[in-house]
Image (cartoon, rainbow, N blue to C red):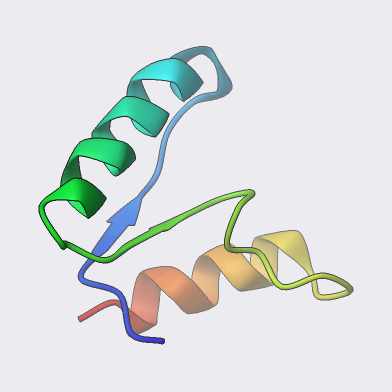
Length: 56
């Protein structure tokens, strides 16, 4: 699934990032956000890098 937005945040901003993601998705804007969209058994950092390059 392609995403329109890649959300990157500090762990201390998780609540704000989750709220932003929820609002965007309610407006039908597809978001990629970790850890929700990290594929199990794949490198966490690799998944973030891959997602940040392929959004759009």
